[in-house]
Length: 461
Ligand SMILES: Cc1cc2nc3c(=O)[nH]c(=O)nc-3n(C[C@H](O)[C@H](O)[C@H](O)COP(=O)(O)OP(=O)(O)OC[C@H]3O[C@@H](n4cnc5c(N)ncnc54)[C@H](O)[C@@H]3O)c2cc1C
Image (cartoon, rainbow, N blue to C red; front, side, top):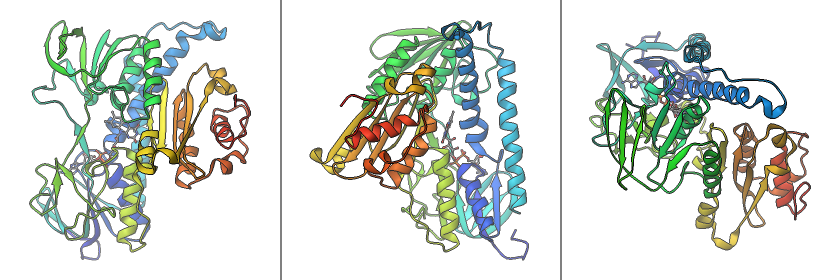
């Protein structure tokens, strides 16, 4: 199968998730003929089983907390219960509207969609439903799946985020294996919905990829919310029966709960797709590319979660746009991985961009790094919201800001400015001279930069 002119498509994209559909949309915008092969639903994990439904759950969770805490603000409210059918209806409506919008967008850009499971059968050919589609360029974006541990089978009361998003009841108690982003977000939701939650994390901290100060503050906040966690300890086994799951750890502790959520990371979906057969280099299943996302084989590129690095939707979007522009000959600038913002959307939220203090010291040397913490205690809007937290800045001494790290309610919305600061290599003095609206949480970023520039306003010297 070829494009409408009877020749090969300019681009054949395998996988219609964040990375694949972004490639298709940008490619079509640049006048290229594009085929997009999708086995399930356009939008992929993020839209149907990831970002969007989890954030809808987190928003419902915030409303539950607000209802429970109304009296604190002098408002008579009461949390009478969680109607999961209602929550799921709201979640499905959000996903449904976005899905419809995306389908419309793909159609309006005249992208040819092939519904079916595709495999790479040649360096320029994808086969789907017995049909061969050829492309001058191939872009692989087949995404990821929820991983488990060896010997830990998913089924029944042992679930991953896929089943957790489909639950039509609120568990009374949950054990969560993994205190990274996904585990912490579900812990936050279920706690707000009234469940007893216990997290098991093998590393020394929750959200272990973040700045250590953020992880510690996050642990304090979770403890205050009554979320239990066990750090630096490994899971050893689980059994399940009609009453629930029975989890044991290597240190001998045991826990009983209604469910065990396995949130130990996501593996690349690359097996059995012909990648190795066509000569691609795979490392533990991930597709290895150069910094221009080229696989080193023919005109084959890879985007999104199958490429080692941050498994985030906006990274997939950026890589998709990059590859389409590369194919169109626009020679785009390569994507700097550390400049990609990272957000954990729990209560409290954690948001960061750029280097942690430890990484900055490793890269630039101990004496060449300066840091500053600005406490949200001095930020009017955060006090109004009743949130604790802080902004931590990392700068090169006498140089630009190279890391912005934040914790507190809604700080995910502040990372937009954080990423401009880091990626535009702004100096604290540049940001300090820009006016931030009062009272906003955003102002905390302004104040932090004022302080780093040596002229703190609502902070002690
Ligand atoms: C619970 C959860 C919450 C998340 N929250 C966030 C968040 O808040 N923010 C964020 O940035 N990221 C979040 N993520 C991560 C985000 O979903 C992924 O990084 C993103 O979806 C990766 O995009 P992708 O295009 O690489 O793959 P995917 O979105 O997985 O898409 C791959 C697509 O390829 C299709 N496919 C696979 N194999 C074939 C084949 N052989 N033939 C045809 N089609 C095929 C699949 O059906 C799928 O549609 C979350 C993930 C999870 C699981």
